[in-house]
Amino acid sequence: MNYVTKPIPTMKPEPDHVVRPWGKFKQYAFNEDCTVSLMEVKPGMRLSLQSHTGRAELWIVMDQGAQVQVGEDIRECQPWEEIWIPANEKHRLSCTGDKPCRVLEVAFGNWQQTDITRYEDDFKRPDQGE
Image (cartoon, rainbow, N blue to C red; front, side, top):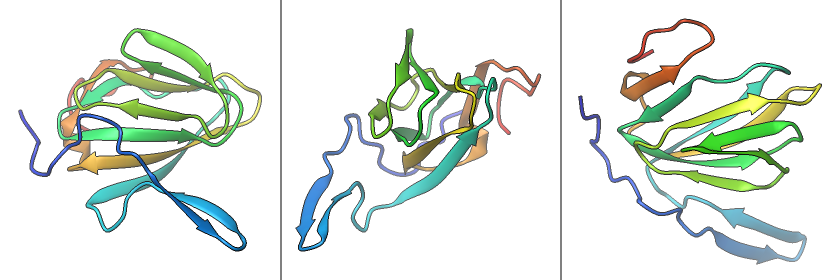
């Protein structure tokens, strides 16, 4: 089933770099339709290997110990590293450290659990949906 109901960027949107007297910030979405989540993964745990038809995701790593898979590429990521996950691309987040790791997710498109396809799942959840 196709869950595309909102525009999904094919490439990572370039953030605006805004400078203020006190410092600066990156603005990843400005009055755009998106969903922002802060994911936390326990040590030794991982999300399912999954893809989504209705959204693309920008992950911003917050902590050490985040291992990210996008497609066949698996790598250890550093804090503040940005990972672009296009719609329909297999991806997974794992925590390889001894403390929980957090990733800020900015999802562009139509965020809904029903658009998930799981290829591998440690918790034996269904291949489709929640």
